[in-house]
Length: 165
Length: 288
Image 1: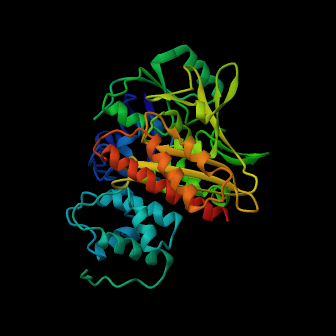
Image 2 (image 1 turned 90 degrees about the vertical axis):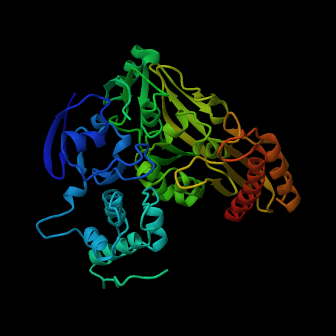
């Protein structure tokens, strides 16, 4: 089946079987391997991408379902102006160790901040409850999202000094 | 994991979808949010020959008040319930439930109609709908009918939706008097199915006497359970401690949970008892 999508702003077409999962279309047909496959059971969130701006787990959506839609992946965050605020937040706050969950975490955070530019810590933790990280214990990820929130709002940036908890 | 091969259609009208489902018969499955069906297909627990995707049919996603009812379109996403002002004002039970259904990404896709039509006793909306005394609209090629939620769940992944039919809407009667509702489930971690869940909807008159009550239980019975004995224990009382204790005790006795990774039968009955008590109190507080 022939489908057409916009991937990070670029029109793409592909011929896929109905059973092809969106994550496989993105990684294998379009070679955008920033989107990861973790659990493959919609538990871990490593495959999180945006479909028309809404975060979704691409391992549990068929490629044919997104025909005509806009897909955003981690590769689309960097622009000519530089890092996206969420990328800068992760970088400044040391919010990754192995980096496997990072693309999914960041894409989820992008939608979270789009809907709620100034989330509380509780809202951030609920907001990323569908994304698992097995290295950092989440604290630095939460700090990164707070940092990105401040950056997006033009507020004073929080300290990025390591906190010992 | 990739599902086995199937044909895919995405009709753009309800009529077209119904015609297709009638022609295909039991070869077809309806694809709504897909977050229960696709995982089952990946594991080959389900191998439909044809998927009829109803996501492109306009007019199936809405939350509105009409006459005495709150009406919810079957393709309304969980996130849309979470963000609905009407729901927040009158049915906080949906906010309780929505927060505990899977996770934010899944709620962006999962639909309320799919949650019911899947017929999974572990899903959360069935108990909520039982508590709210909802009715479900089932549309076929020639007619549509409203079915009480109490006659909707027939057994293991089986509902009143027949071949060639689509669940199109859910309606919930507005309560008269002071009304409050609440839901909670115990889960081992975010995204897990309920170890046990309890939904309560209570209506009080001006003197504080309980005039109507609905109690639904999640994942502690072969089908979603209406805790009738518990309801009877509360009707006509002022929801005093003794009445609440009786209702909680009956709920724990009347359910039939199974031993599994989430806990033993005895443990689950205790969870039901505790949650029933807590949810009655919470619903009562919200009513007042």
